[in-house]
Length: 88
Image (cartoon, rainbow, N blue to C red):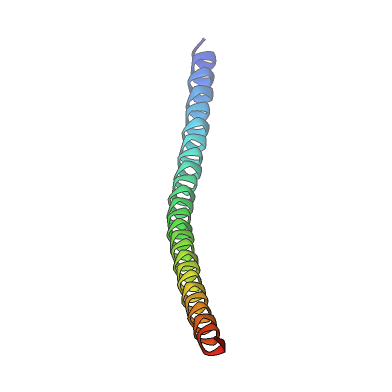
């Protein structure tokens, strides 16, 4: 009976050690995944800022083109009025 009890205790001790080692490995994997999550969140934040900056740049460029177009149209209209004045 003593040998049987000792072997059962020893088996449980080995099982506990194996489970503890597996738990430690899983905790390491969790830490690696958490680090990767933080890196991805940072990368997404940076890309969001870049996207917003690009959108603002495009809007600024569109506004500049619209203003230039209006200026040219105004100048053309003024020139047409001058031409009509001189032709009359």
